[in-house]
Image (tube, rainbow, N blue to C red; front, side, top):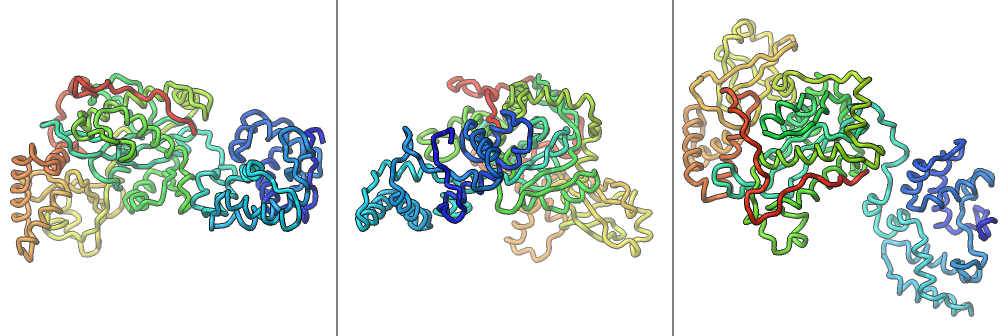
Length: 554
C-alpha cells in the first residue's frame, strides 16, 4: 500500500480490539464516503469523534474508497518495518494482542508493568524475543480510548470521551432549540446593607443553539426551582433594555424571543407541573437529555463551565474546589452584591457575543443579526403575565370567603360570579410566586385567563414562601396544634425583628433579609429610579473584575 503498511483483511484473523476500532471508524467514516468532497469542517468533526488527526481521516477515506466499502478496509495494518512502526515478528504480535485483550482490557485494571511481565513470560515459554516495555506502551497508546476506558473502568468513565451519539439533528433557526441549566456560582456575595458575606448565589442560564447567543440569565439566592426556570424564560422572551437600564449597565443585548423547544436535563424542577403547563400554554416543546447522559447537553454545560472559570477572577471566588482555593479566604475577600454580580455578568455576556465563536465561525451577535433579519421571533411584552404561567401550581376549592392556601385567606370581588356556582366548578388551578405570597392568580373555569386575588386582609405585609414555612415550623415547635392566620403573621413579624437585629452578626440572618429585598413578580409601589452603575469591585486591594475574554467553544 502507499503508506507502507500491510493491511489485515480477514474478519476472522483480526484481533478483537482492532476489529472494534475498525467498526467504530466505519460508523463515522462511512457516511462521508458518498460525498463528492469532504470539507475540512466535516473532516475535523470526524477527527474529533474518533480522536485522531484530520490527515488520518482522509487516509481512512482513501482506504474505504479503494477497498470494497466494508469494515475490514479500515483495519489497522501491521507495520512492514518502516521507520516509526513496530518490528515485532508475527508470533510476538499475536501474544501482545492476546495479553492486551485478555489481561489489560479488563475491570481489574492491571498496570502496564504487570502486562509487560505477562507478555515476557509468554514469549519466553515459546522461545521468542521479548518486546521492550516501550513497544508494549506504544501498543496500549494505539488502543481506541473509548473502548479501552469502557473495558477497564466502565461506561460511565468513558462517557466524556464519547460524542453525543450519532449525528444530532441540525439546528439552524433562531430559538429552534434553547438549552437551560443551573449551577451554584463560584463566588461569595455580600448583602447590600452591611456588605458582609451571605453565601453563594445560583445561576440559571439559557443559550440558543443555532447562534450560540446567551438569551436568558438569572441570579437568585434560592436553590433551582420551577420559579427560577420561569424567571430565566421570562428574561429570554422579553426585551432586555429595561432590565439593563434598571441595573445601570450600558450594554447591547438584543437577543430575545420565546423558544420553540427547551432542551433540559432530568432534574425535578424541569419536570414540574408549573413548567409543563407554562410551556403548553406558550407552545414551547420540552425535550430531555437521555438519562445518565449529561454530555448530551454539551453546549449549555460548556457555557456554564466557562462562566465559572471566568468568575474565578472576581473577589470572593470559591474556585472549583478546596484544593484550587488553597489558603484564599473567600469570605474575607467577598465584595460583590447580587446586583453587582448581575451587572458583571451582563457585561461579560455582551462581550462574549462580540467574539468569534469557533463552533459557528463567526460572532454569536453576527449570526443572530443575520438570522433574525428573516425570522419571525415572538417576543413577550408583558413579563409579569408571562411569568404567571410558570409559577408553582396549587389546587384549592373555592369557598364563600375565597381561597385558603397554607392558613392564608385570599379574596377578591372578582370571585363573586364563581362563588355562586362553586359547587359545580370543583378545584381551581392557582399560581403563587414564592418570592411574594401576598397575591395569587386563579385560572378562570374556562381556562382562558388568570384573575389576581390578594390577601383577604389587605393590611397584611407581603412575605415570602420561605418566611411562611419557617413561621409555621416555629409555631409547631411552640406546641401550636392549629395554626391560624393571625398567629402566623405575628410570628413572621417577630422573626423579621430578630433577623433585622441580628443581620450584622450572622450570615443566615443577612441572607434571609436579602431575600426579602428581591423584586417580586409585580412591585406594589413604583420602582425606584435606576441607581448609577455599581463597580464590581468593593475593595481597593482587589483587581478589577473583567468580562469574559474567551468563552470556550463547543
